[in-house]
Length: 276
Image (cartoon, rainbow, N blue to C red; front, side, top):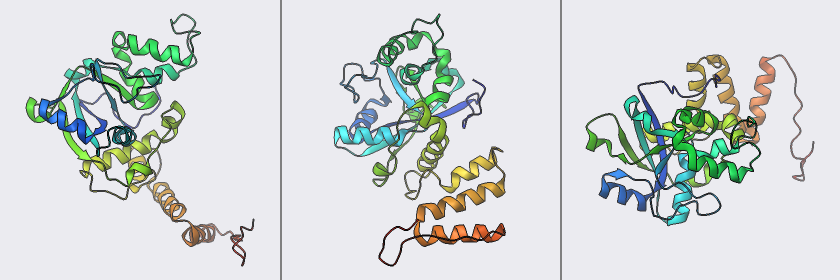
């Protein structure tokens, strides 16, 4: 895959996240490491339970996974920041979900002709044989897995391990509820990544984040994917759109005036009925 990605997957140390619960964090601190679930019941106990021998990681969806753990365990949603240097990246592997969702399968591959459920199960069983696909897994869905346990970084004295543990602000339980799909990640993965990164780096203090936050547009400009002028304009537009009502009307009229256009704004009539 040669498409541009929002993370540098060739850097000396990559940062990923793990969404979990306060109940699980208590055990992680006691053990001084995050262990695969082994014999414990999977949070995802339906058709697609997680594998027992690996820890699942994400570049962009820790809020969703933390919320899921919160609802399942009735304890606070938590997010772990995890640093993985090159020497430890050999233990990364693809997540079965993105590979299971792929439909354009080469005829020579063993999953050709399988259903989605069959493909997902096959990849869960065989992902350790394809460790080189962890980068593709992240590019596709923003998820991958680590084979084995991940220690608290304070215990290793190095670059590898859990570097931060934060409690996710409660208002984000309802703010971020994505469809974990290839299409969603292609469209909004960068947005979710910036929100997760900014939230964790603020140690959970930022409670004003959303998918179109200023940090997202700043990062787009920094990467050269849009000009600074366009980034500022798009951010301004999304602030107005999110605010709605008069703020959105004012933005449209201001933009039209700058472009030398005239606008007619239809809103609600005197009876409060939508008039288009």
